[in-house]
Amino acid sequence: MHSLSANPAWASLPLFDRTGWKRMAFGDFAHSIGDRAEPKDAQEEIYVGLEHIDPQCLHIRRWGKGSDVIGGKLRFSKGDIIFGKRRAYQRKLAVAEFDGICSAHALVVRARPDKVLPEFLPFLMMSDRFMNRAVEISVGSLSPTINWTTLKLETFDLPPLKQQRRIAEILWAIDEVIIACDELEASILNARDTFFDDELRKGQSQSSETLQTLGRALARIVAGKSPKASSEPASNDEYGVLKVSAAGDGRYVETENKALLSADDFDASLEVKPGMILVTRCNAVLSGIGRACIVESTRAGLMLSDKTLQLVPKEDETDTAFLLQGLRSQPYRGFVERSANGTEAKNVSQETLKACPFWLPPIAVQRRVSIRLSEFVRAANAATLNMRNQMLTRTAITNTIFS
Image 1 (cartoon, helix red, strand yellow):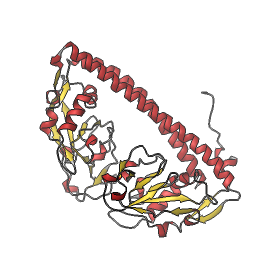
Image 2 (cartoon, rainbow, N blue to C red):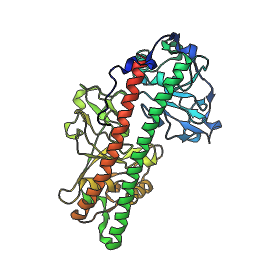
Image 3 (tube, helix red, strand yellow):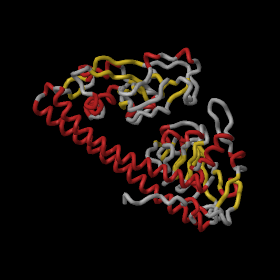
Image 4 (cartoon, rainbow, N blue to C red):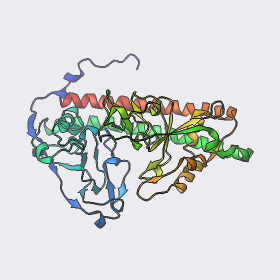
């Protein structure tokens, strides 16, 4: 295997032969489905908002119910494409695997199968050629949005149906590998959590004194603040403030930020730096409160918001990796969710976090556990790296086809 190398002429293979391709307007090979629905009439139906769609992922992995939302929504059917027409630069696009209702900030797109295969269309729409054009034709400053009347006139080159099928088969095969890598990572992390929970139970059975409070593990908690900001992420030469979603899924995502309207509002004492442990203190979803992540790396110029807290562990008394894993454990999670208050947005105070039950054995035990945790993390990172490489391959093929 190590002697194998990439075909230097891969882009000239028959797969990319453009003989017989036709340039067509988007509206000639795709419909925009405008079937509207009222949530009050769809209380138990699946609801997919833009927050449920992950960039560069064709699959819907989470959703809500019609009873969770208000205002008019759109109906979609299995096989339809849900595409975020608002802030198209986020590249949110997914293929529905069930019927339901979705955000009115999305377009529901359905292939005209006599012109384009439903299996092929998602990859055309994921391409840089399509996404860049979608951003260019969006209108509005705060929340740029695509109009179907404009998008349907945009032209794209389409291969014959037989070639579409072959291309789709290859790209969906790559997608299967991406999903397998993602599931492998999830399994490894689940095993990590199980290992920690088992150690926690053993530790408690040996000494009840090791069940302390989170406050005993911390030197201090640093609260952020939220100056006036736009709805757009900060560019590399701008200052930004984190959104709650920057840490909301347990993994730090630096692109989840908003550009400050004034550089003078940037607080250098609240700048996000590698090694920080961040916790969400507020979220519209109960499971999103108290979620923690560690900042592996980050760009400069981003600051904590008033919805994010930095937990600073006691030096020489609390192991950072141990602390982070403890923030995923059931004693902590259960206490946070039971203690959250608020009506629309749930939140927890610093005092509540400090009072959370927390397993805190001697530092030597923490470090022993952390060494084993690091083995799980290395394995999960290997699966993640493989997944990202497969995504790069898919992107390279897609962009070559639709260049």
